[in-house]
Length: 324
Image (cartoon, rainbow, N blue to C red; front, top):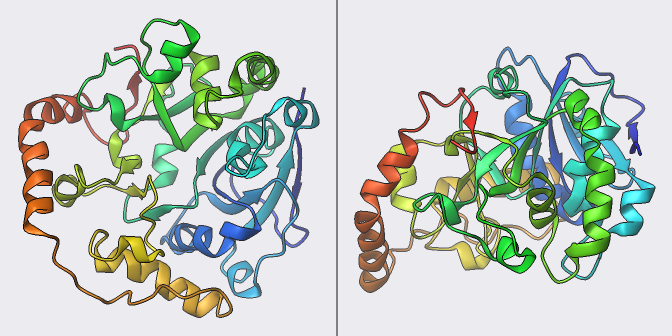
């Protein structure tokens, strides 16, 4: 089983690795923010694409920076996926891209659209030793402080606790991905278990069961009120806005720092003038004292566990076995 991938006609691969920001047409204005930031990295040695299940024409201003588009899908896997209003095909792009881009790219780093690129070298990350694994990712924040915690998906499957990753940032070695027959295994799991269980994250974790390489949380800092203050100290490379408080939404006012909201606002204004703007991106708002006190207490209480977790990584480019 192999996905079909079509690159935009005016895009020509220049490197053997690529960052792909996954989205459909609805999320394109937001996906452009991390894509543009990575495309502008001086001396980059990786390609930058935006990828979705269907062909999509990018604005000329994005194409001028060297960003391409890839449409990828897998008919067999597509038929096996339970889709609904919250689960579009774009949710499963890492599975389509892992096989669809084999033979074009040796490694790919697939990102969700609700991510902000702050710093770091994705090219160096994609040269890291993946320890023979097809997939590398960052542990889900459910297991940051308690690595042995059994998540709900494994409870529902009757499985023991396994390391569990967040699917917002997934690195794939395409040759190993195909050799492990992951698309066929994913289709089988989707038919038998996925309905009512979750989306791509549940699917990939259910198939791999801890057989993946672990990336430093610097590359998928899952931003919540319980990790916001620590983020300023940790200085992550990729900030992932899990939950409903996206930087472009009014719900993020007073929660997400102004610089992060402004990053999305600037891209929308420049490249997508017809899209709804980020309202009051410059508005400063202090949180309620009780909210701040609660968040700081949670981080203080978890300081020891978080320090032990972060210290498992010798640096932000060295991968470790998810199983320890």
